[in-house]
Image (cartoon, rainbow, N blue to C red):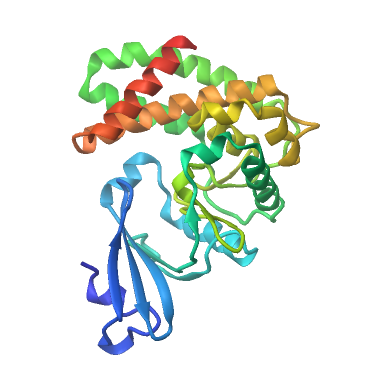
Length: 284
């Protein structure tokens, strides 16, 4: 259940007033999510698990970047956020969550790429730096501490990741706000396409949003030229460079699942995702 102190920050629940509806929603491994309906409207409250920091989440950075996206009409309006990162409250926006099948649809991908173009055009606020090389190294260090044999297995992948990052940094793309976790459940089609859950958002290379998208969804990679063009990166990103950067996100996702497994036994879906990512790395 929601702590009383958090519920009291929801508009309409001040001074102990009870909501009309309090419904638990599906959430990820780093949070618990509730929909709260009051006489002031409908809101979403997310409680964050302590383990989220181990997975690379920066809650202060999330609040700042979500706020910037919300003011631009790209993310649900922010109502309240704990400065220590324990909770986040936003307005509820109705709509249909995307499905994995949407990631194979050229029309849907065009809409998404244009929303990313708008996100990337926002003035980036000052936030903590995002260092993918450091994040990868931290994951490998934690995995290796629990399984020493894994460290030797993963070390060559870090070397290749460093080379990919050097290639990405050779471009002339300016750092901007990136969502950095373009899973279909983080996309909501309503009066517009909303970007949800800025947990992994950062100020970095705009290429990384496209890389994340095509790493998560190989079916989207078949539309790489379209995605590159509609996102505004046509003159600065090649299909080949996008494929390199996508490999980096396959590695990051794989290590994320392995790090998650250290904190809690994996569910069936998580274990299957980890195996699929391992197979993609082996093929690459």
